[in-house]
Length: 236
Image 1 (tube, rainbow, N blue to C red):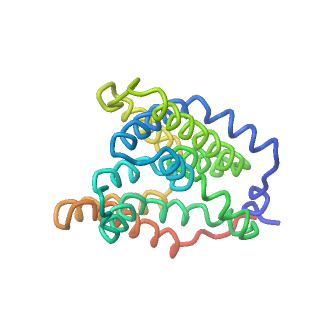
Image 2: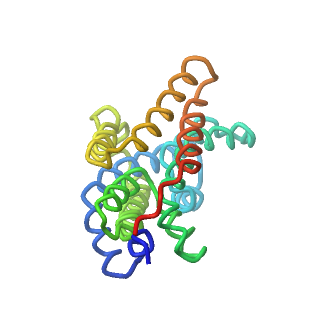
Image 3: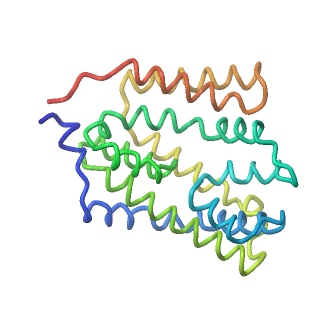
């Protein structure tokens, strides 16, 4: 059994450990959930529709973007393009996680990925590159973030404007700083460096020369495709 297969194990204790590790950060995510619940209610969405969107979509930025174009008649094609552009980074996440997820049955593989977000992905990748079993961080941490997101949405729906604008008090910087710390503390080799340079460089070029939000898609596709094509040799 190679190293990837040995690390691709998940049990209840791993999941619980991942849940506890991500829970402190998840409270900040809950603040965004609160703001989303309040904003969605002000747009006239029903409580059931708001809760269902948070539960199934679980993508804060794209949910806020959807509210910006929400109306009596929802423009479906612009909505699809916008949400795809914002969430295109998940292509890169999937490519980087594939060496471990390929050992899981499809039901578990895609079930875990339903809860993948920036924070638990970054911590899981850091754990994998240290030789640890990190699927518990990916799944358990994702459950912690999702739970706080749902709790925040519910509070925003029923208790009003405790935090109307999380950006005004700097909550938007918390996750960014966390991801930067995870990146700097992660794996450092030529392959990883080149992938990040290609993703970042292509995203910047797209930001300067292509339509708005296309840089997210271009950066994710270029980095993700390079990572998928430039496969590592299996560890033994």
